[in-house]
Each structure stands twice: as C-alpha cells, then as structure tokens.
Length: 379
Figure 1: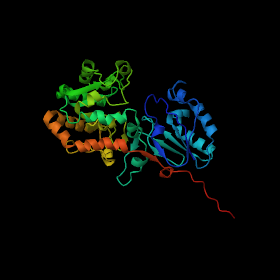
Figure 2: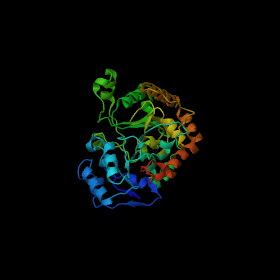
Figure 3: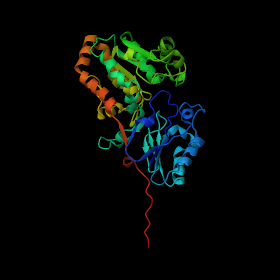
Figure 4: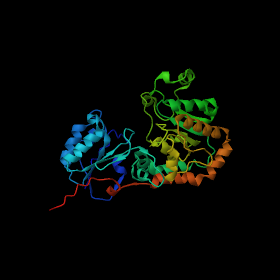
C-alpha cells in the first residue's frame, strides 16, 4: 500500500506536490485535520518532527508499504536525515519513505529505504536515464496544474505574431554574484535599452568583499529594477514564482533565465525559472549547470541550438562567458531578424508549451529500490 500524507508545507497558492503524482497502484490519501495549519505554516517554521511521528503512528505502515510526505517535516531532524529515515523504516517493519522537496535542499537519491524527489539531480550517460525519468522535478510538472493554465494558451497566442517592443526579458530573483555579472554585461553592451530587465537585489547572498570595486559600483548605482513582483515582497527577497510576468514576457522575444545555481559538473538544478520561457512561449536562453541544456533537449525541449552555443562548459567562468557570447548574438540581431527567426520556429516554440501541458509524472513503485528481507533456508 502507498500512503500519502497530503501536506505541502508552505504551499501558499501554488499547486501542491501531491497533485503531481499519478498513482495507479493501491494508495491512500490520508486525511488529517491540521492540513491548513501545516500548509500555511501557522504552527511555526518547519520541521514538524513530532507532528510527523504522530501521523506515522496513525498510519502504522507495514512491510512493503510506501509513505510519501513533504521533506520539510523532518529534513533538519537530529542533523542526520538519512539515519533518521533508516531508523524509522526499521521501526515500521522495513517500510519505505519517499520525501518530496519542492526547493533545492536535497538531491535526488534512491535507496532501499528512502527516495528523495528533488529539483537537483546528477546527469548520467544517455543510456542511463533513470534520474531523468524517475525524479519528479516539482516545477517541471506543476505548470499545467496551476489555476491560470486553461486560459494561458488563448492569452499568449494573441501575441505570437506581433512585432514585440523588446528583444528580450531577463527577470532575476535575489542578488547573486553570477547574476550580477550577467546583468552588468547587459548594460555594458547596451542591450539594456532593448530589454525588459528586473532585479530584486534586496536579498544578497554573498559578501561585498567577493565583488570587484567596479561590480559593487554598478550594483549600487543601477539596482534594483523591479518588474515581476510588488516592492513589499521584493524588499525581503521574494519573487514571483507562480506565473511568468506575461505583460513583459509576451512583449519580448527571448526569455533569458539565470538559474538559482550555476553548477559546473554533473549536478543539475532546475527551479521554476527554467520553465518560464516555455510557459510564455518565448525563445529560451538559460544560464545554469554545465549540462542543463542537454538535459532539457533530451526530454524534448527546443532551445534554439542553431542560434546559440549550448555546448557544456566545465567551470563557472566559462559558463558565464558562453552566456555573454549568446547575449551578444541577441544584441546584434535586428528586430525584424528576431521576428523572422521567431516565426520560423513558431511550431517548435508551440511544442515546448505542449510538452509542459501534456507531460505527467506516473509514479510506479517498481521504478524504485525497495528493501528485501534476507531469505533463510529452512532445515
């Protein structure tokens, strides 16, 4: 039996992670009377360890059972998440736990006693796509379940053939060094006058000593510009993650995304940002992990690889340099050239949108490792 504790901690108005799971095996969505307290965090900041343990006692899972729940119930418990899960698995007759992380606290991991669904995972060779197929990236699957989705195709369609006001949009979240460097480059080459630019910048995640004097000066003189969220939210580092700012994205051609993490090597992180170009039918240009573009291409998304250099780069400096070179390409194109390119590839842009609309996450317990009790010979 599969047991789901249907609480999305801190869900707000977003689609709940448990609504993403298409389960055909026997399962139970357990009902608890504290769902609002948990989802709105009215009982304080997580973790809610005692709360979770009480629910587990009520469910009382048995051998072969699976319990799926929000990672923030226990992800700080005792400073040792994996040890805790093993202990609980043993206590409840070798059941298995599946934790759902809608942020980036965990990496995808699958063992006999627990699995982490995460927005971070390691890239593997093409013939070993287990982590691509089996990891439920929250933001990849939630878009088509948001309440605005049924109307979006009709709204965006009206703008597809327009000559748009700006070449690109670049909507950035909180202040990070890599983002700041790219943002400054947009101003350096003069692309700022032909772009919609938004930068919250009130929540900084580095020390000023890590920046050059020139970069500090730019930040202090040019930032912030706010386009996608009210100033009250931006002041505390909050950004709009529920829906792309359509008045901006629909009146520009390229959507230039700067992911939460720029990770050289095999680790990929995907937040809500990377899906925004596909949602709002823009031409995508995504800054992120070394293999982020290859991953997106392998699951079917078109990324304008005939226009941009998307070859994997193995250090942060090279990733940033490649992205700047791709911004140069946008900068040198005229509006008519960009419009013609957009129209030429309209069917591919539409297909990107369709992938988000149709793709679902089918949960099958046979896709994951499970605990097998040792067999004893009877004499």
